[in-house]
Image 1 (cartoon, one colour):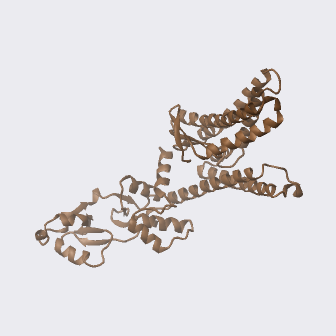
Image 2 (cartoon, helix red, strand yellow):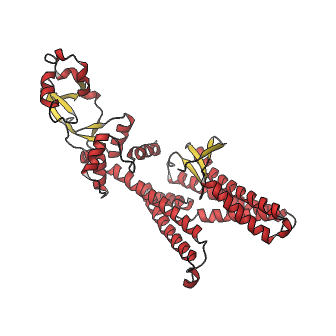
Image 3 (tube, helix red, strand yellow):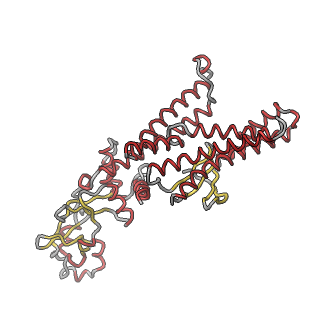
Length: 410
């Protein structure tokens, strides 16, 4: 999602403008103003440049209506739209969650191009009704109609992050029954088409297109758009790979036995002397009569007078097992993350089918298991740092990924 300054709301949706938007407005104003001053000298410089500025604003007005199309259909489906941002490459609607079905996903995806195509038809009809052929209003509206047709066709290119990619995702989702497969197909198409745009744009920029018999596509601008498409399609693909892995990995695969078991009848003095003065375990569980009784709350020990440590036992600082946040061995890692984040837990306890403590999972264990599943290189030093800090690395915000997946399932 793009960062930007809020300038208002539309239908309850915050409208943001990214600083890069002003650069594009200036660029479009300059380009059109220069062309129209040379093409229509009878307009005069003031009218030509004013028309250039109006054209730039109408262009982004069309982009805004396009994004409103997506947003309003999403709102009709009960999905929250966090914002609409106008930025360097056009606009983007930040939709809170994925539609529930491929049919609804198709409706949200196609709404934007349909709005742009509707504007093309409407503006083309108005142009036919205007007198003359070279008046500023007619030239403006005719050009705006053409731009909306280009917006329609461009956005229907079947590759993420474009609307056509969202349409392809919905279709593959419907055919295969897998939303993940839909994303993978659309992301791969987006990366392929984006890469092609980069190559064609660079070749044209260096004057090689004509030599190779290739069509002119827009030079550096098209190469930048291709780069944007490749980056975003790759992000979609990576995110989906992580989500798939988190759903497939079970708690039993990620858990470790980084805990110690102590006798619940130990005196607090003996517990402290035997287990806290030397190398401490991350977590302790207490047993009596062959049964797990709970987790030892080491942080509660200083609250008890030292004079009572000899007479009081570990039972005094136990969190009963029914109150300990636990998951089953078969629980997905996605659900483990959700539990940890919702309750702000440093780790969770894993129970065997018989109800015994089988292991524990912290954020370092999650990253280690995920890296092994996805063949990512994460050193044990990095894992140790994650365990010590109790937070995910900046480039791997699994908490946000799990929260987004949870919203999509609501």
